[in-house]
Image (cartoon, rainbow over all chains, first blue to last red):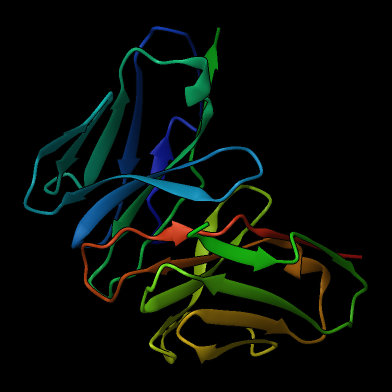
Length: 110
Length: 114
């Protein structure tokens, strides 16, 4: 399959801790995007990293991209209970399609 | 509110029926998409339209027919519904076909086929 595959499938941490989610993919990409989905809601875009970038920051989010290993990671620092959601990586392939996986379910315990 | 909206939010129907899901975006975007999210949360693209033209058509049964009357609307019609069609369907839009655009998602339509 060609989807972005997130690891772990589920993650439970204490508020204040950092959360790291990993993503692997199989195609060559234009960029890789991370999205968040709260339960019962649509996806919300978090951050986009281009194929020629290695690291990007946005607030408490840090994304890395290693195109040689076809992998990416999303780090959420100083997590909050409100960060509880599912997180999806979505590599964009050469035909401009986003290839989603099944996400990482993050639970941040107060 | 500027957003991507879908109707209905929930749809429960019998096998064999025909149903439609409507999507509208008032963001002025050129490109719209339909995605299907299954029970394991796996999200897969079905169709994409750019300025009313079909540009992505994944391997989807021809019982599914998208229709774009204008670039702000992309509706999904499903004929002869089957149990396996039960899923959450998301509409999304983006500013254009450029590779560096984020997509904006609607709230989803939960379809249950009995």
